[in-house]
Image 1: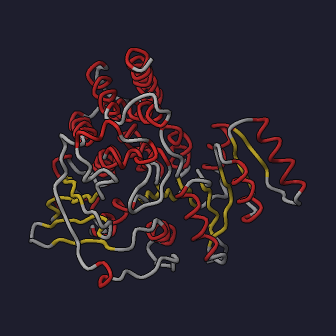
Image 2: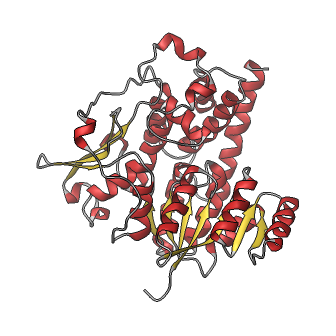
Image 3: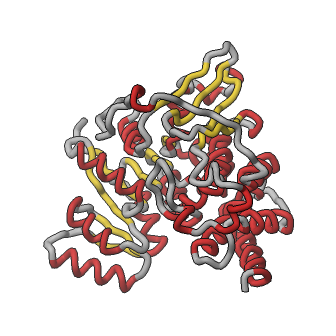
Length: 396
């Protein structure tokens, strides 16, 4: 290796971004942070810049960029501060960048992630919404540009590790019968259904196994996160929705499994720590130390499994329906969910009304083919408008 790999971290102040920077810091001879981006926790972004000394930083607004630029210059850093979506796309596609950690949550991550794909980078994909919104376009861009797409979600990374190297021939061609996508079940796995309407944002964000941001924590609690992952798995591994089965596994030790036609089932196990899939994708096809402690099976003692109740968690059912429908349905689902989760976190709606909003939007908005990024963004905005209309009618 002639020089260390230069990494852009989109969403550096989030849990995935911080874990990525932890792995990078463990291997300074192999990796360096080339660009860091942040949205709201800008004091934390400043501290990360002082620690990792990137060439670029990106923030949302020009005034914020000016203040951060002055602060970093005063500290003796030559970091150049950019702002807005154009700044995100610039650091994602920069010619000196080797790999991009795509960890911006939600639809906001689509354009910069796609810019990295079009530039042919190694893409460490933690932003599942990019594939959910624009799967066909996204995967076509990967094929056209020659970008290397490596999944970061622990489940998809596990599947990637359990599949043969030539799985792109087609799952049937390599003897795969089905993909078993594991789910912890979230904090409400055993909560009586009649109490779900009264749960608070704080309860929804208290995941039993993983430390995550508020939006993805609510998605885990509603099992929408697993629904989005089901859609993502279909695109990543060219699978039909019927080939992807969700399995609740409360311990979060088996991260996913692949079932083969000869009766073999391969599983990837590990402690619930995102540094494992991050280090795997950063170093693939090699392996490096991630800082994750070894798995102690004797301390775990048992592994449990159960089928998900899609009536209890209707978001999972709605996501599967969107996957089966195809076209713009997953984009509609994702946009409506983002609006609904934000409203729940603002205490404007009940937890159970998240699914009500999504169901209403899917019923009202026509499903259409998506043949351009502009079409994807137009569908996204229509779904958000429809969700906001529901809120005005029902939430005041």
